[in-house]
Amino acid sequence: MKQLMPILLMGLLSLSNLAWADASLQSALGLTMDQARQTDAIQAAHRPKFAAKRQDLNRELRVLRRARLAHDSKAVAQQEKVTAQLQEELKQIRMHEDDEIRKLLNPEQTRKFEEYLKLRKEMVGSSRDAKDF
Image 1 (cartoon, one colour):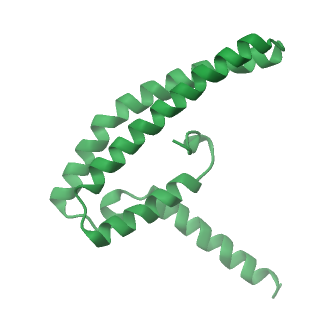
Image 2: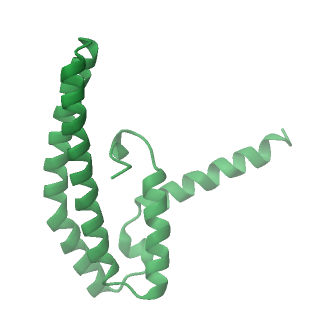
């Protein structure tokens, strides 16, 4: 049991970091009310674009999966290009949103934001299917 304690402690710390990455930006970064309002507006502006593009990507990934199951190399090659383009577009949307948020932050908040982004990228699971974007 004594040997399991460090492993359990590390697991709990990891869970707390993941919870922090899912926390609102206001609490995670210590934003002022005005900053929180502005970041909410930025996120609200980008969320529909990101969701629509991710829906397109998911649809094209299903087409890619069917092409792979059919062993259709020509269709696979074509779909890989389509999905790569959509992934890049998702990445650009996310980067643009993050850049707009960075403009609102002071140096300490920026440092915390970079940690927040690192944790967001490391998260896995169905809700983080686009973790590379």
